[in-house]
Amino acid sequence: MHSMVNHMLNLSLEDREQHNRTLCKNINNMDFVVHNSACIGYTGESGKLIIYPDTDIKSDITPSGLSMFVLQGSIQQSYALDNPILSEGKEFSDKIKRLTANIEVFCLVEKNQLKKFHEKVSDKTKNQTSVIFTNISDILKPVLVKPQVYANQETAFNIEDQILKIAKLNNVEFRKCTPAGPEEAASRLYLNDNIEKEEQSSNDELALLTTAWHPETPTSQNDNVPQSALLESTVDDSASSTSKSSCCFKTCNR
Image (cartoon, rainbow, N blue to C red; front, side, top):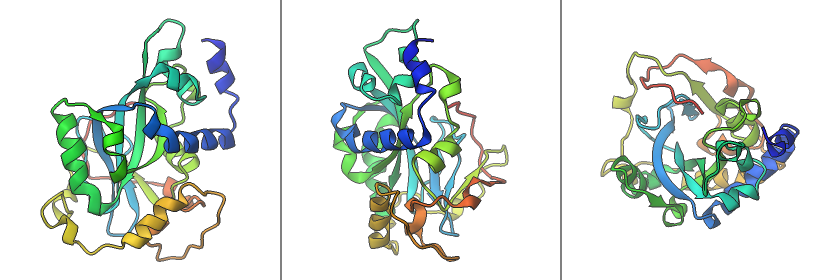
């Protein structure tokens, strides 16, 4: 493995967090073309963001409330070379030389934007139509940017670690996919005509998204954590616990 990847092994957690924050702010200027998309998380009745990290990109789950999506696509290799995190991608191994680098962008979409996201992104990518990120940047908030495939698996965090330690999300719950079937899906909203009429806490959600870029700012918490606490700077210890799931998807290696 070339020296660049060896150097990346020495990146501290703080460095990775800073580089990720920079990527999230600058992705709109990196000619990012989205080829695939999938919902991997939704807000449950408890107010927690429930994430299925093993969801296959071809078989996403039903979004509701503040939801998490993963976008897979490509940028010019020159952009990736400028960032230590993206330089860890497969395209930078000694045997692979390409003009583009494949990346994944994990983003949050507020519930009042789900219908637009479905029309502008989900419908198109499922029909194998690519989407220019700059055309959709106003309906989502990037929280994590990473190589789609790492050149050296030693450098790769698992998704739970990246979401908690790099993206600094809290009040989240991770669940594993099982063959049982999505029992909860029928009781949750799915991109229908009433989506904009749902009771919302837009101010809380906007505050939530703003907090993401100031992880050094402490935020108070209590037992009844509102949906807006999802992006507070302090990671919720309970978020790392894995619960039983009722969702059926193939495993997607990240």
